[in-house]
Image 1: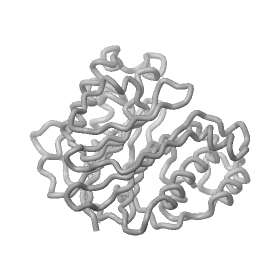
Image 2: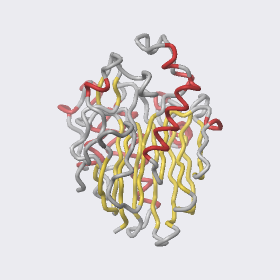
Image 3: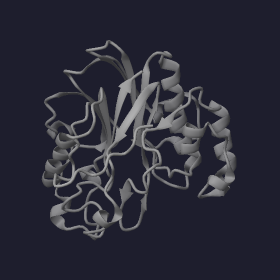
Length: 311
C-alpha cells in the first residue's frame, strides 16, 4: 500500500503536482448540490460561502489543482455549468430530484467502452421489494480503456441513502453495485468504486465491502434493524472479490459539519496497484470557520484522491 504524501509546503491547499509518478488518479467528491445548500441547512456558514457561483469556482479550482485522470462526483446539480473541457462527462440524474452524479475521465487518457446506469427505485420495483426502498438513489458503472496500454478499468460511482436508521437500504444499494461490478467485469480488468456511502468505517456496509463480513449487531448504530440487514445480506451473500480501500487507514473525517463529523466517502479498488493518496486537511484547518462549507472549502464533504497503476 502506498504511503500518504505530506501536505506540500508553501503551495495552495489543493496541489499534488509534486506527487510521485503514477499511471492514473481517481477523485471522489460529493460537491454539495446547490438545491441542498442554504442557510437553513448550514446556519453557521457565511452567505457568500453558500453562493453557488463562488462555490463552483472553488470546486473547479480543486479539480484543476488535484488534476484527476478520473473524476467521480456525487450530489451534482447544474452539471452543465461545470467547465471540464479535458474530460468526457457521463452524467446521470436522480429520478424526481434536481441532483445527480457524474463519472468524467480525461479524453487523452481513456476511451469509454460501455456505460451502465442504475435507478435503485426501478430495481426495487422490478424485484418487488418493500416501498421503503424507493429513495431515488442511483449508481453508475463505466468501463474505460486506457489509450496507452489498452488495459481496461471499470469505475463505479454511488451515492447511497442518507438516513442512519436505514442501514438495510444502504447495504442493499452498496451490495448491488459491488455484485454488479463483479458480474460485469473480467478478472484482468482493474476495478474502482467511488462514492458517498453515508456509512461510517465501522458500519456493516463498509465491513461488507472491505472484510466480506456477515452482519454484526455490534456494528450497528440502530441494532433494532438487525433482522432487516440480515435479509439484505442473504439476498447477495458476501462479495466474490477482495476489495481494498485506497485510504488505509481510513481518514478521520470526510464530512465535517457542525452537527456531524465523520467518514462517509470511500475509494475502493481491486486488481490495480494503489500508490499515493492526497492527505486530507486536519481538524484545525477544517474548524477555522466553524465547519464546512466555508470560504475555503466549497462542500460539506472533502474530496478524496488516490493514484494508481495497472498491474
